[in-house]
Amino acid sequence: ETGVTQTPRHLVMGMTNKKSLKCEQHLGHNAMYWYKQSAKKPLELMFVYNFKEQTENNSVPSRFSPECPNSSHLFLHLHTLQPEDSALYLCASSQDFGTVYGYTFGSGTRLTVV
Amino acid sequence: DQQVKQNSPSLSVQEGRISILNCDYTNSMFDYFLWYKKYPAEGPTFLISISSIKDKNEDGRFTVFLNKSAKHLSLHIVPSQPGDSAVYFCAASGIQGAQKLVFGQGTRLTINP
Image (cartoon, rainbow over all chains, first blue to last red; front, side, top):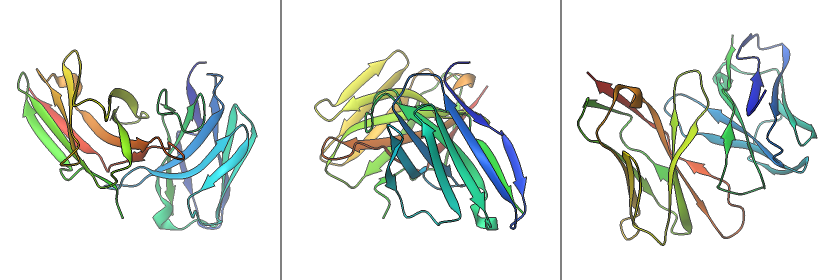
């Protein structure tokens, strides 16, 4: 596979469930990002990892927990979410942290919290 | 405080005509601007960019114009084609510090046959 792959594509979960979103990039990039896209809102940056180290957490609630075991994989662990957390969660990667060249996005996970 | 704004949530244009998508920004430290295109069920893909040292960048049917004094940029698509129907996101970044992208809320473009 090439590019950035996100699984699952769709996820429905109850507020008491625990689930994880997975992102994998096959581009040899060193930085990975989680974005949230809610209806009629800008893409919101959630977390940034550079060489597996978290470099940014944009005041994201603790019910979202990221994990980056290596430069190719990024997870977003979810627990006790709220209905307003329903959104499209996008993963992206880039060659280096902060570069504006070559931000590659995955297709996203459409999350519905019931 | 939203630093990048796309004030038109949607735009409908007839096939063959020009589509103009607008974007305004508030942070004068931004010096690089990008447009991304997003189809349903897919992630955004890079379309075209412009540096603040330029006021125009053209790539085929797509042209981006930057007006630094007005803190405004626009994307022109001409002629518009049905395959251009998508959501278009404007994004900006600055050289100083982290260059992470700041996105607008997107404009849904519909090209009518």
